[in-house]
Amino acid sequence: ANAARRPWRLFGAMCLLRLPRITQPLEKEEEEMAALMGQIELEKSHYSDHEIRKLEEEERLKRRRESPDDDDDDDEGTGKTVIMAQDLEDKWEQKFLRFKAAPRITDADKKNIRTSLNRKLDSNLMLLVKQKIGNQELWLLPQVEWQPGETLRSTAERAMATFLGDDIQAKILGNAPYGIYKYKFPRAIRTEDNVGAKVFFFKAFLQSSDFTPTELKADYLWVTKNELGDYLKPEYLKKVNRFLLD
Amino acid sequence: LCSFSSCSSLVPQRGPLRGSHWQSSVLTLRTSLPVRAQPKKKKKVDVKKEQAQKDRMKKKLKKLEKVAPELIPIEDFITPLKYSDSNRVRSLPALSPEEAERRVLLLKKWSLFKQKQDEAEKKAIRSLVESQQEALRELRLESEELYQAAIRRDEGLFPFQREGPTYTPPLPGYDPPEGKCVDITKVYTQ
Image (cartoon, rainbow over all chains, first blue to last red; front, side, top):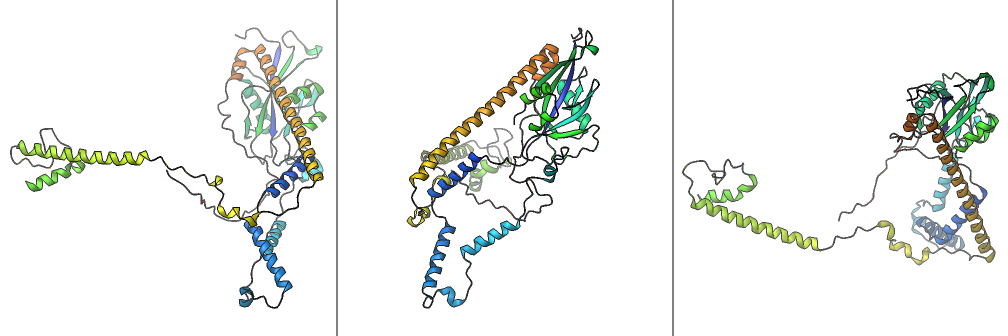
């Protein structure tokens, strides 16, 4: 069927995304709105059991302070210690302060180590690899040439496996490509049936959380959408930005 | 013979299967020629009694079913009476006009913010769909079979499960306190 050799070479590239692990910080309007909602909820609510108990105990304390002599509560007489609601609240507060959560801004963030997966936990991270195209070394999404007999999706999977090893767990989103970048080769190497190349992009989500690639053959980086501009060529970047939601 | 008749009235529940319909009572040992008159009487009486019992049961069932089934109460919609006490009402200072003004302005700002956010999301989705359509068009120009492979459904994609982001990342080496979760929801049957 494909007897006539097409002039374009096909490549399959994989855009591997590490999804965010923590929530993004709230915008100013969102914070104001959240405070307002809390206030309105408080105004519309009734007292809870805990609050009623607290109010009653405060009243009792006040009465006892004002008339210290002749108040004979049962508890005073028997000498039992009563746990007040305020004590409970203090205890809970102490327990909360003692717990130390993991920091949202990690070490890798502070030192801007772009090869680590632990930075920018609140945004998507994409894998970029340095590849040799023609006689230039460029930063690209990992790509590999298509071979007849396989679908483009398997080309993209092969691209991922070549750069990251076989045991990578990624969920590829569908069989269809998400974007395309086509370019013509410079006149020097252009021939009748080798005009240029078409690179088809596929998207995948990284599933394994602690991923440390041991057998990486080339230089790699994990970057966010905003930092892509530092590494990719403008035309390439334009096409890639079209299918990135962030 | 009297004992036989009492046995055979209980037979239909537990007796073994009849070999042939000529064998009228299941527990008989073949001692003599089957006497036609008595077995017939036994059958009629039994059949009538059984039918009468069945009818009574059916009537009882119908009476029960005529009553509409009791609705299962939704616990969330019924406020327990202890929460409508008057001492429960919160006593807060009334809203000043400046505060009311501030709230209204904030709500307007919020609606504008949300509109912009929604617009940006829709734009991103539109550009993604466009990019995908363009890619498929180019692929079709290249080779039809690759195109057909690309537009095929991916069966392994759904059901897609993913844990959402939390406020802080997971603490390595954290030992959560031991405990058991006991479910005390009330289960109603109609």
